[in-house]
Image (cartoon, rainbow, N blue to C red; front, side, top):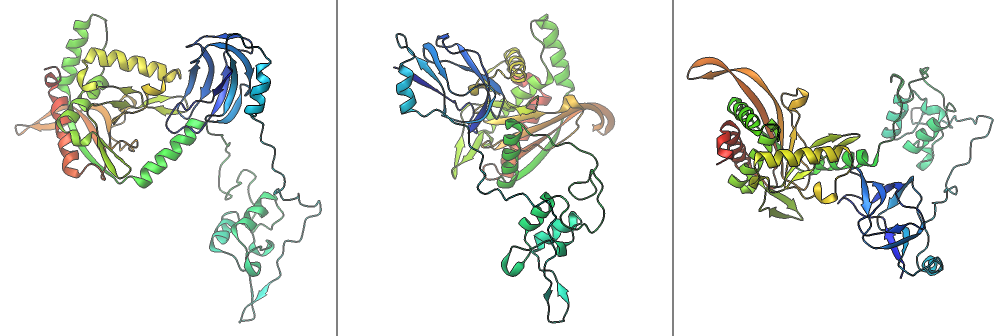
Length: 420
């Protein structure tokens, strides 16, 4: 029996994706586990593996097609013994995806060659003066574009000029009167420098949407501590020397481990707010922000509280490498319980990160730098690292956030506590 190959949902937020490339062609034999296609999701470009065996009978969606809906059939797999005649039945049962026809019914007709007279008939006020009626939004848009409202016909109630009228006048390109001359490059307000418009990738669109929703819907608050990391740096040097090149621990590996162990000490911070309920997790699965082309992704170090520095280091290097290559599997970047964003390698001293929903916390880590400190009443210097915890106040209160940072600071400043 023929099998429909559907557009997979490769991330929780994915509703559509781009079919970048087919690795198989019609007639090819396919075994379970074979890579058959590459799909660009809202997270990355990922390989799709076959789950059934047979031969590829028909490709329904050609490579290069964008905005293919999740669960839409993209190909037909014929099982052993089936031939092309089986495709006829499939066609009647499952309509082939068609290109969306261009919608022309609602497209306004092009303006006549002769420029229309856009001057509205003045309306008399009680003072006997002429007045142009327009909504506040229409006035603001017209002011920014230096358009004379008197040259734009109104389509609102009683001839009132609305936003759509001003936008139509701008789209018609010069049929409305400008109050002041515009520079050729100043399309929006008359003051912009030269620019180009870049169509964002699916990843960038989803990042923009999720970050905006997170900032608007999650009540953030922030808690900051300075951590002295001289003992950590010394321990790192000793561990790497004893490794003899088998692995190389980074400061970030220590931070991942400290994040996870601090969640063991303060489990209330290892939680999410979902459907008006608090989900408190039993393992510390740390989502680590990794910059990739076009955005970022957060591969997850599972049960990091149970892993040693060497294991965390190897796992993180592998995840980061495959993240940049677009080869992470969905389970490798979904389902974290706590996020870490380290910008210290970029020379950033301190910053506030936006929470990665539905998680309740994200830790923003700055660079380690030598700063003046007072110890025992004496001025000296130490290597300090500023860390800021962003917290969802629906889940985590101030005291819990403060207790978590205290536990984290104790671990970072006393790294021997992480190997006991």
